[in-house]
Length: 265
Length: 158
Image (tube, rainbow over all chains, first blue to last red; front, side):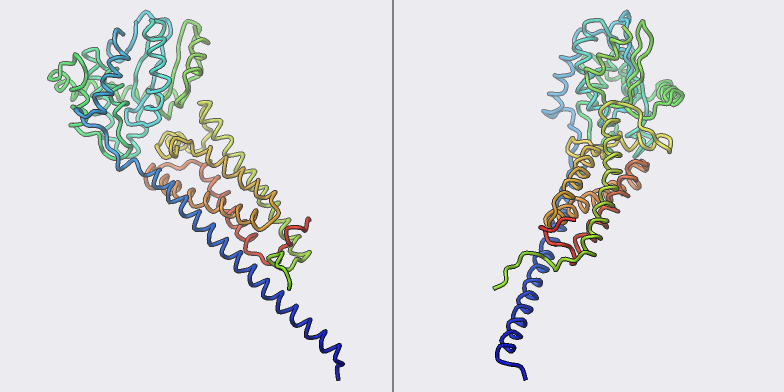
């Protein structure tokens, strides 16, 4: 039979074991609560990220008479004022350096480039007569959703080019670009852009924009891009007296563009 | 009264397994980090991305899903992988759970992006798939590490 001291020790051991078990249970519960908390936080973070990523679909391209469209028109008019245009060329044909953009009017990365480095290029280098800018077509973002609309939208810009206003149209399109994949490029949208181009004969443009010749020109641009291995937009090609710089297939910044120009000047 | 200081009783076997898990997480996170660094460099330098399927990577990269709130997705991946590596240095439940949280977030967002690649963009970028696989494996490994109850307490170093 155990002595009184042994009984006390056994009781103490049982109490310690029970306390350790309780402590472990509390720790397990805390850990589980933290795991559940982390899972919930992860779900919320990803939910917000998905909402932001998909969120553009609720936005719309501005209508022709909206304040946003009027602001865009004012910016474009100011940017292009006094710069000669002919067909898909912006700037003096005598400029020694030619910068060619292969673009897709619905491509959001092209919009980033257009409103960033390209607008700086126009304001600084094209306006001064140092650089001429050429716009050509390569289907990327548009063709992710609909191949049929691409020649229609690009021909609309080319039709404006027949009257020396292609770059007005291209710039207005990028400034007022809608969310990708939302089917916002309708006849009303294209006609609305044309109605904003200062000096454009709308009736002639409307007649020209369905021309098969222009659609063929879009197709020829795409074939040339494919032949050169260009697969993304914007693809920027810079040519000058010293040859051609390595083409860049992304929305490069203005300093990069300037260094490309310098390398061929 | 006994004070609670550890989530579970320590064991040498638990410490050894945790060490192996940390090495595996380190290796996978470094692979993912390499992919993220490459895609970030390609994004900002304008270089052509190396791609097995003709044009697929460029198609994905030029889509609206290549950025989140103006931030290129590779940069988000870069932040995620660095975050996982940092949590490996935190020898506590907090480090383990934070690592799991980051990996789970990356895994769920990778699932969303893969869905967009397959059903919206209709093009697959091998680098994105590689990163998604890394995040999936990291989620499994960090989850195992979090769920184990035989890990050493914070004070124990292996």
